[in-house]
Each structure stands twice: as C-alpha cells, then as structure tokens.
Image (cartoon, rainbow over all chains, first blue to last red; front, side, top):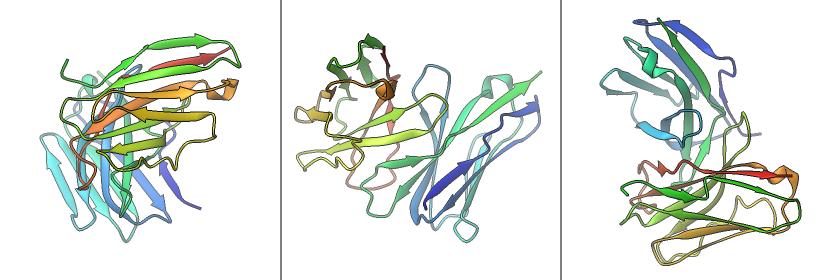
Length: 113
Length: 116
C-alpha cells in the first residue's frame, strides 16, 4: 500500500542546533516533493519544493534533500530558533496528478531556549 | 485581502443537517483545492478545480460531499446529512495554475466543523 511516513513523535531541540526532519514514502513515484509549515489553528504555509531530478534545495536557513532511490526526503533547519516551533508537513505531487498533493501526518518541532 | 479566505471559521451543527463551507481563493489563481484534516492527522485531498476543466472529485469520501466553483473565483463545499465522522478542519488552497506542476499551494486557515 502507499504510505508517507514522518516522525510521529515530537522533535525537541535546543536553540541554535540543526533540526532534521524525515519524510519516507513507499509505492509512490513523485514528480515533486514539497514541505509546508503549519502552526496551531492555521493553514499550512509553503516552504520549499524539490523536483525528482534535484538532490538538494536551499532557502535561507532551510535545506531539503530528495533521494528517490531511498524514497526519502530530509528537511533541515540550521541555527534553529524558538519561532521555528511548528508542525512540518511533507507532501508529494505525483506525476500526472494534476498538482494535487498527498500529505504526510507531519512532525511537531519544538525549539527550546 | 491578499490570501485565501474561508468562512465560517467555525461551524457547529447537529448530526443530519447540511452544511455549506465557502472559499475565496487568491485573485488570479486558476486552481483551487479542498482538503480535510482530522485531528492529529495529515491532510486528505477531497476535490480539485482547474479553470474550466471538469473537477477531479476522486477524493470525495461519499456522495454526501459535493463542491462547486463559480468561474475562477468562489468555491463552496457542501456536506449533506452530516455524520459525526465528518468532524474535521476543512482547508481550501489555491495555486496560480494546476496545469503545470511545481506550483506551491496557498492555504486558508480552514473551517473547523463539529458535528454533535
């Protein structure tokens, strides 16, 4: 069966450290993978998109990797801050899927002082 | 406003009633999506509109669910004869186009639906 798995347990890290979140998928062939941030009571906010033929994408303190052999994406936040505390969702856009997204359940990140 | 707007923000209704949820996408966005998010879960795709094409209804969970979109503007999601398992946050998103991939989706803050 098709699955998108993200760490179900919350990730607690210290301010200034690098947070690494994992997204694994099975039985999908995504054309693109997107990462979103969701704060309580709010809709998701787009962060980064990476294509199947790209290995890595960066934006400011954020970095995403995409390994289609391992069927895994890693999302890194460097020099983390308490304001980075949120739930982070990965989403797959399938080839021929018309831009509709299939989401993982998200990982809650808490950055502590 | 500049973002996706959804109304109402909260809706409490009795089992068996019909509800209508509204979404105003970002002006100029031709693609519009509805998702459902149950407590502690990821987003489930419901339906997708792209311009004048027939909508992709493949995610609608039952025939009690339907949606319409007027041109490239407002969309309404209707749930008939609501059941308790319909309780969730219903999220709407829009993107510049759905015809070409790699478009980020812009989400509203959702309608929190509670069925008593």
